Length: 576
View (cartoon, rainbow, N blue to C red):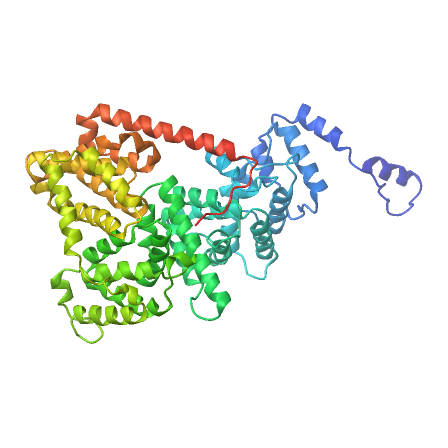
């Protein structure tokens, strides 16, 4: 047209500069031409030529044109990620395209997801373009944020995208960021990641912030358990227990939320989750959460404290003295409802301290070099002065110990069957009698404490002990943290080489125990995966490994059914 008008203008005898007529492209025609005449082009290379100085996508209609023309020629649903997220000279134009794709309605554009990303997209509120389920997009944005100046248009555009996503798709953003962290190595855009995580932690690790927190926490645990542990610890550290009523209430509600996470993961992921969460912070965090969890029957507080003292000695015993000393004055009866420190748990702690090994009690404390026993005695007197009902809490109960040992003796001499003892323990566990509850707790503690000596047991006693141990797990007489400890002991035993001597005895103990709770294995698929990786089990016990693999398959099917049932429904926040 231009050539024709120039010729016509020339014939008119020098009429001046030619004025181009205003015309609009017929994009349907262009698309048809691309499809019919240019489909043989390498459209991946064509997409790379979008990186021109003039390229800029100003709005969704402009995006629609770009996509329509590209799709018509390439016969592909979208621009390849290699081109979209590659290195562009026109970074402003590139970001205009990406921002438009993120904001696009589903009928115009959706990001292509792999199988895992597609499953995770179902968690939380659906985002139309599926942008924040695409890890490639998040990775690109983080890289771009770290390679641009903070005041640049590109950097500000990236921050704007994430700010919007924190409101509209927080579930997808946190899952994507944690997947990138799981990959190892240096995480791109670390400064931006830290800012985003600070806001996301308050969404999922504080109570009442997200209706989808339960699903998100479970998925985060699957991806990177240590992130969940650190999330709980950071959430705890972000609130103080002192100050006014509102601050105390916020502290308690946060701790209750963490306890809810412990319960959720212990029940629906792996029994040892509670142990890992409670082992992730300092002593103040550990004890604060454990004491509240004890009141909610999520943690068997006496067994938990006993194991910590046995494992860490003075490094745990003395901080426990200090913790009780700081909190006993404000302790309230458990029946008062949600209380930070209950009188019942003060009593439990005093019992544990009173029963510390004599050699530990004789050691000097870090603060004044007096024996630990002196600190325990002074603490007990102070607690009893404030709460007279604790008068007998700090004394070791020889009678309880004797009764617990007598029941074990009856098992080993065949005076009582394991089934009869299990039924008795069920009654004791739910009994209103504190004496019977103490006998139950003592028997569980003594059995766990004997674990280190099982390799010396005669064959008969070893078999009985293994069967009893596994039956406790099968009948749910141990739960949460205590269940995690029991399962860990069985796994450790199974990993021992089945050879003559102590190692072989521990392996046989593990096999006796495992046989009893096989019907529950589908509840703990990650635990099963640890078992089937044991080389000598795969070699010599193929049938057992096959059964466990079937249990894992059952767990997967149940998880898929649960996911399907939850689609389109809000799921409640983590229940304490």
